[in-house]
Length: 123
Image 1 (cartoon, rainbow, N blue to C red):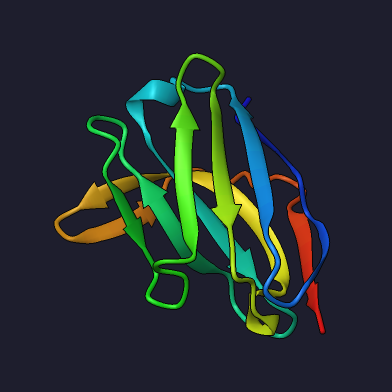
Image 2: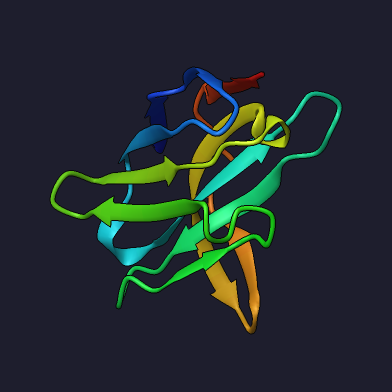
């Protein structure tokens, strides 16, 4: 069974930093691109960052580019998200998942989602 367990969220001040981690299981982790998504109150879930399974190349949503860094450890089946210069608009629940690339579009692989990690940025 596919499972994602996110950790590392919390309350952080405006401009602060936070690191999220996600432990994945139930599938061949190294064979998939991995991603972070977030969902703010009253909004749809949105893709934040993707890291490929092959060369470790990364893609970021414009609203986090330059501030967030996604990384992975295939030996531990984990994916992380380092966040700096946090803004109030970054307040959301953050989730990880796997991604498949069709053409130029990323598609989330699994219907299963973890419990997510609340990140709250306060002033």
